[in-house]
Length: 308
Image (cartoon, rainbow, N blue to C red; front, side):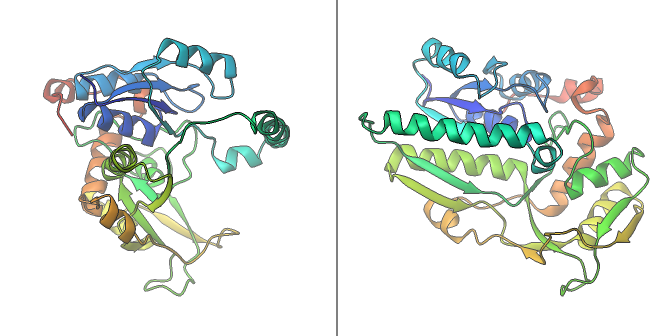
C-alpha cells in the first residue's frame, strides 16, 4: 500500500523528475502533470526504469483549470501536491505576451479569492523550499538536466562547452570581493535536493505544522573559477572561458544557511561537488542531445530499479 499519492506539477523537468523518482523509491504513488513546454515525456520512462514503478502522467498545463479538475476527479487519492511547474525569468522577460498574462492572471486570481473567501477550508500544511544552485545528474547516466535551447546555469553551460556545442564559457565578472574575484554560489546535487523535498513532505504529513520554510543547500559556497576547475578536472582538460562584464543584478554571494532544514528535517546534503561534476559529465558525455537520443546500450544494461 502506498504511503500517499502526490501530484507533481512540472514532474518531467529537472528537479521535478528527480523528486518524482525519489517519491516512488520511497513508497509514494506519483501523478505527474506537465505541459512539456520545456521538458520531455521520455523522463517518465527513465523514472520507471530507475524506480521499477511508472508514475501516472498527464500532458496538461497547470493554467488549465478544467484539465486539473479532471485529474483530481480521476485520482481522488491525491493527498499532497509538489509544485515545480514554472517558466524561467529570462523567457518571461523576452515575451510581452507573458507579462500581460501574468497581470491578467493576477487580477482574475484576486477576483476568485474574493468569491471563495467565505467558503470553509480544511486545514492545509505547506512548505516553501528555497533552492540555491541544483546541479549534477543521476549516477546511472540515464537522467539529468535537458534544457531546451541555451541553458542559463553555470554547470549545464560547462557541459555544452565540454561536448563542443559551445565554444567557450562566459564568466560574468572577475572583480568581486571573493577569493578569486568571481561570484560565489551554493551548489547542491539534484539527488540531495530531491531527498530534501521528500523530507519536507514527510515532515508536513507527520507534524502538520501549517506553513514552514526551509533553505535546501549545502551551506558551502564555490566560486565560478572553482567550478570551472572542478569540472575541467573531471573532463580531463581545461575548458575555455572568457571573462566579460558583470550581469546586471548579480550579487557576490548566494550561499545557503541550511541549519533549520538540518535540524527539523534531519536532512543534509551528502554528495560532494566532485560527485556532481562526475555525474553531470557522465550524463552529458553519454547523452549530448539529452532525452532526444537513445542512451548507450551499456547504460541501459546496467540500470536497475533501486529504493531511495
